[in-house]
Every structure is written in structure tokens, then in C-alpha cells.
Amino acid sequence: MADEVPSALLVLISAPSGGGKTTLCQQLLSARPELSRAITCTARDPRPGEKDGVDYYFLDPAAFLERVRAGGFLEHATVYGRCYGTPKSEVQGKLRQGRDVLLNVDVQGAASIRRQAQADPELKRALVSVFLTPPSLAILEERLRKRGTDSADIVARRLGVARQEIAQWTNFDYLIVSGSVQEDLRRMLAILETEKLRTSRLVPPRL
Image 1: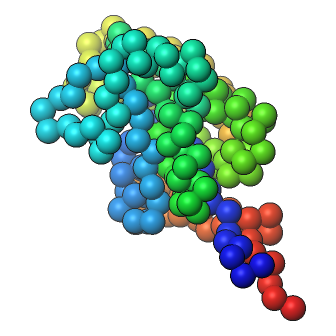
Image 2: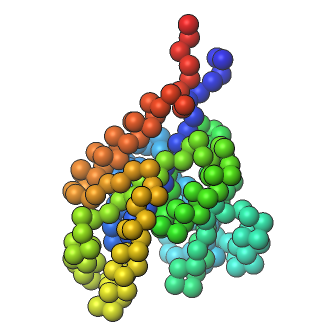
Image 3: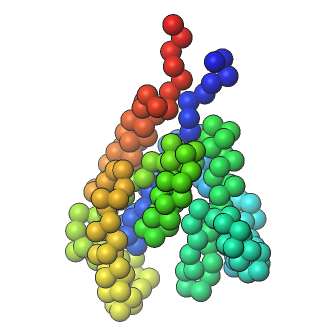
């Protein structure tokens, strides 16, 4: 058909805290401007400089809870007492426009999205999940301590959670053992290129 287009990708990147997923996502968005970041919802107030519909969709707590009850999120979580969620309509709308979508989520969020994809052929076809992890917990601990944002107790707690999260790597389509920022980006771009060439995603050649 003349109006057929290759199917879009829903690219999900997850990692333990301090694993480098935010940096990788930023690099990926710079390298692939056509890749669209999914804008998430939050029930907190905007911080200085943040704009509604650009950084987040800012909702009041009641509106956020209503979306949860209506099944309007692919995944949602409460982080340090504040609610965040990925709106299903945001992701589906972009996919239906043929736009590749990037999600930066934790391991629990990734599990929620995978469950929903199993029941939704559109999401299942689009989903590509990638787990990014440092080579060892010792290296992750070094990174967390270098950040200097957490106390020793919080670092120890994060490492305990990270051990459980890293054990989930087999639930993802791809594993990137983190090296340099440039190497991580090169591998991620290779994954995208591979997924774009899958026959299930391509427009049939004209014969």
C-alpha cells in the first residue's frame, strides 16, 4: 500500500540507580532528533524553569489518582512522596503518528510496561527493552559515591536495591554492560538500527 510506513519503536531503557540511563537517554536524543521523549505526568508543583507539556504534565493529586484508577498510565510510581506516571495516550499517540518514542524508567516501571504490552498488540509490536548496567556493584558503588549527593546509608540502600534490579536483566530484550558514554551510545544506536531492520517492522518491497 502506498500509505504504509514502517512501524514505530517504543524504546525502553532501564538501569539501577546510578547506572547511567539518564545520560544515555540524553545522548541518544541528541544523536537521533527524530526520537521523541515521552513526557510523563507528575503530581508535584513545577520547579523554577519547568514548563507544563515540555518537562512534565503537571497534575493535581486528585487528577493524578483519577488517571491511575482509569488505567491511564503505562506505569506509575511514588518517588520520595511524589507521584510520577507515563500516560498511555502520550505514548500511543506518538506511535500512531509513526514517531519512535523513548522511555526512561526504573525496573519496576519496565515490568509494568511489559505486562501491558503482552495484552496490547500495538505496544507489543513496538516495544524494545534495554537494560543498562555497570560491570559490577563495586563500580556502581564508586559512581554513586562520586556523585556526592547521598549519605553512606542511602548509598548502601541503593546498592541493595540495585542488586535485586540487576538480577532482572534477563527480562529485557537487550543488555548493555556500561563502558564509556560513547561506547554505550554506539551500542544503543546499533540496537535501534537492528530493530528498524526487522522484517516485522518494514514495509514490504514493491514487486
